[in-house]
Image (cartoon, rainbow, N blue to C red; front, side):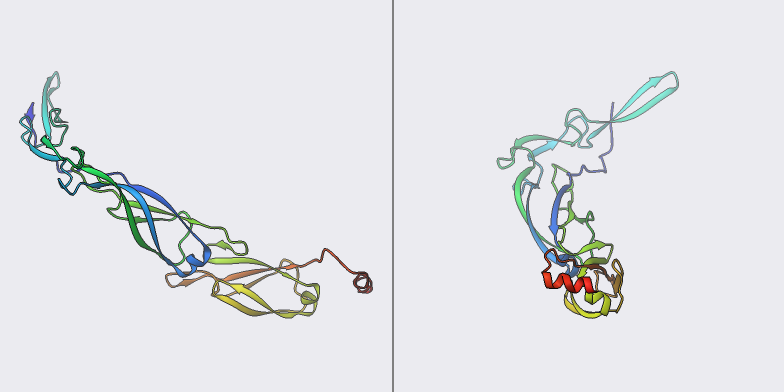
Length: 240
């Protein structure tokens, strides 16, 4: 065995994945969210070292050893982690009283972050260095998974928003101005005379926005059929 050079690559703490539920109106405007979660954080008392240490006497702080073997094909050289220090390069001689030599402590973290308008369900927001810390390594990331809450009226397709509009028979036959809901308030549209059931009205720029691209509102026209009909109404329907 020979002593090797000090390792360049540092170990990395694990990522933390959290789900954040948002509704269609929050997706429309974008929103700032604040969440609380548990993580492993570098110990402030020992700066993540675990306590007082001294360089390993086998690898001299390199963390690795070079193993040379003679084989029928010649000399083969392998680099292995130093078994004496576990590849850390240092031997702990006095443990930190706060982390008991672990170099990390568990804590609750509160973080605030922005969710941009138009984000899709299943998209991952990566917040660097807000995951788990690890002894003598770098901190992982916080991965925020977006979960969209279903809306009772609006259905999403990309940046377009679909809704079904139930109209009366006379409105379909004769045409009529109708008030409908959108993501930023009510608007009035005109139903043309003789509109067919299942016809889709496209209202430009009334969907979701992402960067500088707007979606549309797609309104599917449907017939509202009454469940209770009075006798005089039945006579009129028969006459029609």
